[in-house]
Length: 117
Image 1 (tube, rainbow, N blue to C red):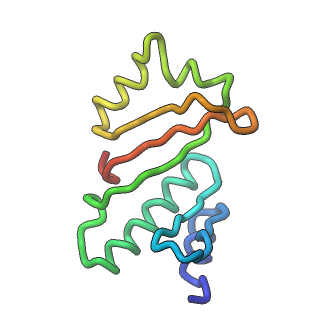
Image 2: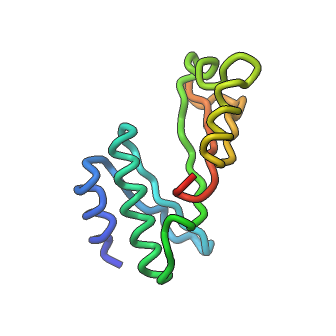
Protein backbone atom coordinates (compact mmCIF):
# COMPACT_ATOMS: atom_id res chain seq x y z
CA UNK A 1 0.00 0.00 0.00
CA UNK A 2 2.90 2.38 0.50
CA UNK A 3 3.88 2.14 -3.17
CA UNK A 4 7.29 0.64 -2.42
CA UNK A 5 6.97 -2.01 -5.13
CA UNK A 6 6.04 0.50 -7.85
CA UNK A 7 8.89 2.76 -6.71
CA UNK A 8 11.31 -0.19 -6.98
CA UNK A 9 10.01 -0.83 -10.49
CA UNK A 10 10.67 2.80 -11.44
CA UNK A 11 14.22 2.63 -10.10
CA UNK A 12 14.95 -0.69 -11.86
CA UNK A 13 13.57 0.60 -15.18
CA UNK A 14 15.14 4.05 -14.85
CA UNK A 15 11.92 5.90 -15.66
CA UNK A 16 8.83 7.27 -13.90
CA UNK A 17 6.23 4.59 -13.05
CA UNK A 18 3.06 5.15 -11.05
CA UNK A 19 -0.41 3.76 -10.43
CA UNK A 20 -3.63 5.62 -11.05
CA UNK A 21 -5.61 6.41 -7.91
CA UNK A 22 -8.40 4.30 -6.50
CA UNK A 23 -11.57 6.12 -7.45
CA UNK A 24 -14.19 3.50 -6.69
CA UNK A 25 -13.43 1.64 -9.89
CA UNK A 26 -11.99 -1.86 -9.74
CA UNK A 27 -9.57 -1.00 -12.55
CA UNK A 28 -6.29 0.75 -11.94
CA UNK A 29 -3.66 1.51 -14.50
CA UNK A 30 0.10 1.49 -14.38
CA UNK A 31 1.56 4.55 -16.10
CA UNK A 32 5.08 4.20 -17.50
CA UNK A 33 6.88 7.11 -19.18
CA UNK A 34 10.27 6.60 -20.78
CA UNK A 35 12.08 5.43 -23.86
CA UNK A 36 11.36 2.04 -25.44
CA UNK A 37 13.96 0.11 -23.42
CA UNK A 38 12.87 1.64 -20.10
CA UNK A 39 9.18 1.00 -20.79
CA UNK A 40 9.89 -2.59 -21.86
CA UNK A 41 11.79 -3.28 -18.63
CA UNK A 42 9.06 -1.71 -16.49
CA UNK A 43 6.32 -3.65 -18.31
CA UNK A 44 8.15 -6.94 -17.81
CA UNK A 45 8.59 -6.25 -14.09
CA UNK A 46 4.90 -5.34 -13.70
CA UNK A 47 3.81 -8.47 -15.58
CA UNK A 48 6.03 -10.64 -13.40
CA UNK A 49 4.55 -9.04 -10.28
CA UNK A 50 0.99 -9.63 -11.53
CA UNK A 51 1.88 -13.19 -12.43
CA UNK A 52 3.24 -13.86 -8.97
CA UNK A 53 0.07 -12.46 -7.45
CA UNK A 54 -2.07 -14.64 -9.74
CA UNK A 55 0.31 -17.63 -9.64
CA UNK A 56 0.25 -17.84 -13.44
CA UNK A 57 2.64 -17.58 -16.36
CA UNK A 58 2.95 -13.83 -17.03
CA UNK A 59 3.65 -14.32 -20.74
CA UNK A 60 0.01 -15.35 -21.25
CA UNK A 61 -1.39 -12.39 -19.31
CA UNK A 62 -3.48 -10.07 -21.48
CA UNK A 63 -2.44 -6.43 -21.47
CA UNK A 64 -3.43 -3.24 -23.22
CA UNK A 65 -0.74 -0.62 -23.77
CA UNK A 66 -1.22 2.95 -24.98
CA UNK A 67 1.74 4.43 -26.83
CA UNK A 68 1.89 8.02 -28.02
CA UNK A 69 3.17 8.52 -31.57
CA UNK A 70 4.19 11.96 -32.81
CA UNK A 71 1.54 13.06 -35.31
CA UNK A 72 4.16 13.75 -37.98
CA UNK A 73 5.52 10.19 -37.58
CA UNK A 74 2.12 8.48 -37.79
CA UNK A 75 2.43 7.93 -41.56
CA UNK A 76 5.71 6.09 -41.10
CA UNK A 77 4.19 3.88 -38.40
CA UNK A 78 1.15 3.13 -40.52
CA UNK A 79 2.96 2.68 -43.83
CA UNK A 80 1.45 2.93 -47.28
CA UNK A 81 -2.12 1.61 -47.16
CA UNK A 82 -1.46 0.33 -43.63
CA UNK A 83 1.29 -2.06 -44.76
CA UNK A 84 3.63 -1.49 -41.80
CA UNK A 85 0.91 -1.86 -39.15
CA UNK A 86 -0.46 -4.97 -40.87
CA UNK A 87 3.01 -6.50 -40.91
CA UNK A 88 3.52 -5.76 -37.21
CA UNK A 89 0.11 -7.30 -36.44
CA UNK A 90 0.93 -10.47 -38.40
CA UNK A 91 4.40 -10.85 -36.85
CA UNK A 92 3.33 -10.16 -33.28
CA UNK A 93 -0.22 -11.43 -33.09
CA UNK A 94 -1.11 -8.25 -31.21
CA UNK A 95 -4.15 -6.12 -31.88
CA UNK A 96 -2.95 -2.65 -32.88
CA UNK A 97 -4.95 0.47 -33.56
CA UNK A 98 -3.48 3.90 -34.32
CA UNK A 99 -6.23 6.34 -33.34
CA UNK A 100 -6.99 9.35 -35.53
CA UNK A 101 -7.48 11.93 -32.79
CA UNK A 102 -4.50 14.02 -31.76
CA UNK A 103 -3.61 14.96 -28.21
CA UNK A 104 -1.01 17.72 -28.02
CA UNK A 105 0.60 16.67 -31.32
CA UNK A 106 0.52 12.98 -30.41
CA UNK A 107 -1.70 10.16 -31.71
CA UNK A 108 -2.57 7.33 -29.30
CA UNK A 109 -1.68 3.85 -30.49
CA UNK A 110 -3.40 1.00 -28.64
CA UNK A 111 -1.53 -2.32 -28.56
CA UNK A 112 -3.36 -5.26 -26.98
CA UNK A 113 -2.47 -8.91 -26.53
CA UNK A 114 -0.26 -11.10 -24.41
CA UNK A 115 3.25 -10.01 -23.46
CA UNK A 116 4.53 -12.68 -25.84
CA UNK A 117 2.80 -10.89 -28.68
